[in-house]
Length: 181
Image (cartoon, rainbow, N blue to C red; front, side, top):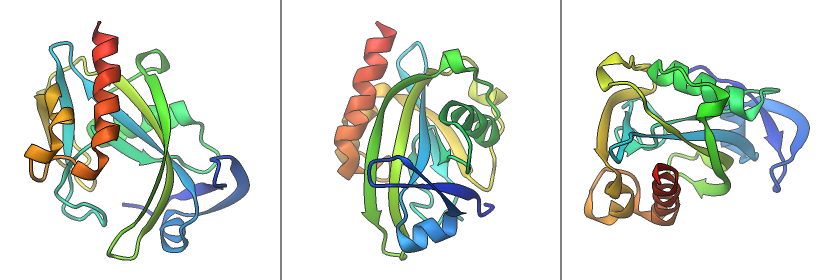
């Protein structure tokens, strides 16, 4: 879990020209950018990762397939492709990624981390088996395919996703269903 150099953005998500370490952004609440990549299968499953127990935020929680910070000077799409490769060793190309939006996310965690982020949200089809994926153990404890409907039923499932983000998950569900036709 290296402390990465990231770009600081303003409250509208525009690059400010300044950089800082990820730890500084989380300490002082500087806005910065991340990528969220939701991987689904053609048979309506969603890949979730169980966050490593060493993570500072939501350790051990089932979460987005892959997520990570965009490095300083890095473009959004290459960052998404890099994160997927790093965390689960799955190769994507730009054409595999379908951007479904950008969310402004602001939360103050009990451990002092101030998350002021713009999440660039993508969906992509998972075209391999779980057995062929290799986990980055510092980030990911486990991978599992869940029925896609879990994105609509977060209140029923303790420790799988966070109920307070139900609307976000429901919007991801809607976009995946649309993509599957």
